Length: 204
Image (tube, rainbow, N blue to C red; front, top):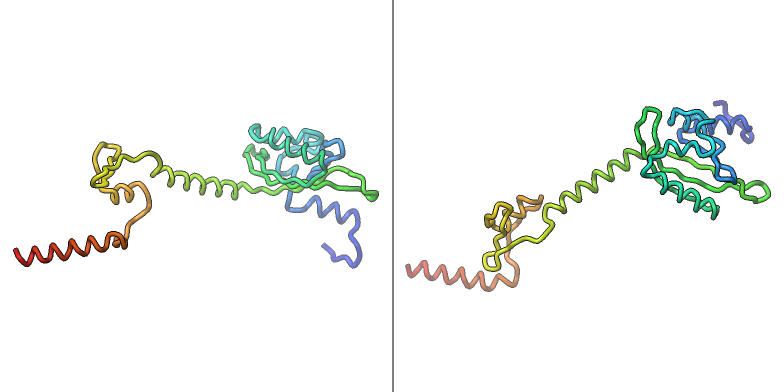
């Protein structure tokens, strides 16, 4: 693109909007969408005529549709900026997570003129966050519930009905391991017992 010394022309702006690496839409004061840039149309594989009005909602995942519509309409009434994520069907039929940010626009007289929005594909981030949450949930689940433990020896009864040493049970059901030490409360008794055993061994 040739550098400009002055302000951009309408043609320059149009080219930037059409070729921007993001999906762009525009809605009038009637809440109906009247424009989508070429990136959006390439993404959905649909024509501008198909997407205009409420046509774009045909590509929103059924499970996300109402949530998406509620955010759009409630913020539209208040003329406030909104952000939302929803799944949008790509041209190949794949559902992709979209981060959509809508901003109210005003004309030269300060009158509300509708909304303009930009969208980016955030599927990889959403799936990574979900995988992390599932991994954390699985890790927590391994030690969830009521564990039968002996009040005398502190062994735990496993799923097979056998009594296991506490350390072994936790080690097998989590990624935790143990480094052994003696807490201050147990140290005096432990020391006294070791001394008594040593004296007994000498007498023996």
